[in-house]
Amino acid sequence: MLGLNEPDAVFRCELHTRRSGLHRTMGALIICEDVWKVYRLGDVEVQALRGVSLQIERGEFVAVMGSSGSGKSTLMNLLGCLDRPTKGTYWLDGRDVGRASQDELAELRSREIGFVFQNFNLVPRTSALENAQLPLCYWGLPLREQRARAAAALARVGLSGRDQHYPSQLSGGQQQRVAIARALVSSPSILLADEPTGNLDTESSREIMEVLARLNREDGLTVLVVTHEAQIATYAAREIFVKDGQIVSDRVTAAAPAGRS
Ligand SMILES: Nc1ncnc2c1ncn2[C@@H]1O[C@H](COP(=O)(O)OP(=O)(O)O)[C@@H](O)[C@H]1O
Ligand SMILES: [Mg+2]
Image (cartoon, rainbow, N blue to C red; front, side, top):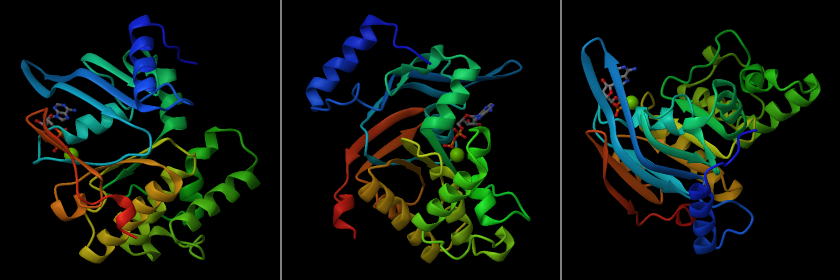
C-alpha cells in the first residue's frame, strides 16, 4: 500500500484533521498544492494547469466550471489518478499520488475513484448488468457477488428492471445512469463526472443531476462534476471556476444539496 512518508504531509493532514473535527480520517480527501500539468508536443509546451491549490473534504458536492480548454478535464484526470502532476503535490486520502508507482495508481483508481464521462463509454451489445459489473472483474469476487453488487448499483440509480437491456435499448439518460452504476459498483470515495450531461437533453440532464445529488446527500459520496452549464452547477454546494489552467474563483453556492429534495 501507499504510505505517507513526508512528516510535513503528516503534519498538515493532522492539523487539518484537528481543525475540521474529522477524527476518523486523515483530513481532507483531496489536497492539491501548487499542481502543474505541462504537456509537451514536440517543441510546443502546453501549460494545462498552472499552480492549482485545492482542498476538498469528504462528502462535498463540487461543480468545476470554465470554458473549453481551460484545464477542467486535465484537473479531473489528475484528481482521478489517471495522470500525475508535472509539478506540485497531490494527496488523495493522505497518500502522495505523485510518488505512487503505476501499479499503486491503478490500485488507488480502482478502490477510490468512480468515473463518469460525457459519452457514457458503455460496452455495446452487453447488458446493463454486465456493464455495471465490469470494474469488479479484476477483484476476484465470486460471480454471484459481482452480479449482486451490480444489480444493487443499478437499483441505486433507479434502473431496477433494466438489468438485461443493452445500451442501444436505453435512452441517453438511462445509459448515463448505467455508467453511474458502473462507477459506484466498487464503492469509491469519489465520483468524478466530466460533463456527464453534455450529450443529454434538459430533462435527462436534470435526472442525472438529481441522481448525483441523492448519492451525495444520502450516501455521503464525494462528487465532482465538470460542466459549462450554470444551471447544472446549481446542484452543487460549491463552485470552482477554472481559467487558463488556474482556479480563479472558489465559492459556496446558495443551493445546499439538502435543499433540493
Ligand atoms: N494529452 C494532451 N496533450 C497535449 N495537450 C493537451 C492534452 N490534453 C489537454 N491538452 C491541452 O491542455 C489544455 C486544457 O485541456 P483540457 O483539460 O482538456 O480542457 P477542458 O476540459 O477545460 O476543455 C488545452 O489547451 C488542451 O489543448
Ligand atoms: Mg474537458
